[in-house]
Length: 85
Ligand SMILES: [Zn+2]
Image (cartoon, rainbow, N blue to C red):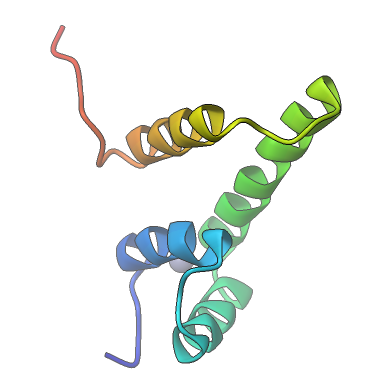
């Protein structure tokens, strides 16, 4: 796989932003994000949220908060557990 769609990209971006993707995949993601406003906005919002939380607490984010934030982001993506109305 040498190209990625946004759907795959968002999935990989989660890992990318967590620093757990291989170097070659980082390069692919970098080039995709650079040319994709949607993914650029996703990265910006992902990076901005923890920073705001850090400013508010003036300390490192607790692991459970990181997990719930990730769960929230995955739900926003539409791939998380959904509640039926
Ligand atoms: Zn994209």
